[in-house]
Image (cartoon, rainbow, N blue to C red):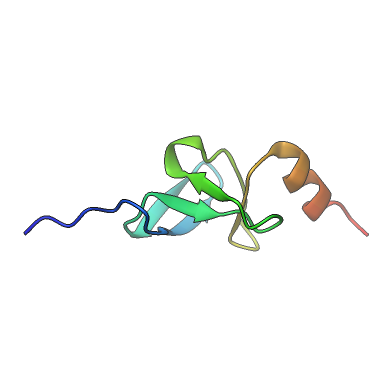
Length: 66
């Protein structure tokens, strides 16, 4: 039986030039806002922290030195 990945968060391993799917799903959650990010729209992530961001601005803000 085929299972649909619709409305399921994916588990990913973020790497410098991409990511690997550890558990299938259709989205991840933004670390800064909690917004859903469709995998096809995912462009920004933190390799060291293994977290995703919905936009470049959110990623820059979260990763800026304090």
